[in-house]
Image (cartoon, rainbow, N blue to C red; front, side):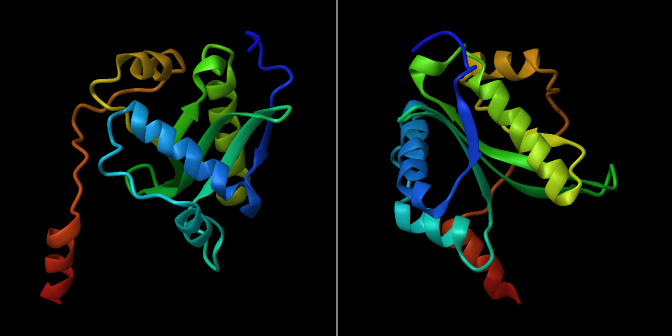
Length: 166
């Protein structure tokens, strides 16, 4: 892999890209130690990303026949800032393409697409605490860490129990 992203093409994912999206998400899960919780498949990518009401958007970076990276994101809204934004759920770049600008270009294109599609004025994401290289990458781009916020998640049985309250 050359150390330039000039010949890298970034395009919105199409339904035919679902197997590649699932594979890249699987590679990301493996790299960050989430393989035991990983459930994404080509079928779930098609269902949730390309169905009647898509729940996310994806961008793919390619160079020739080689897939270099993925950005998966969706709209969010800040009541504090009173403006829409986008949340990047997953950003993955192939090891051989890291340091070439592919990740930066994927984020830039996601920001542009979010701004064009729903008026996004900010971008949010989460970095694993044990991934200092990613944290440095995002800080170099100007991302701020909000130590006053603690992401929380309700899953599985607790989610079902909450739904049953009503």
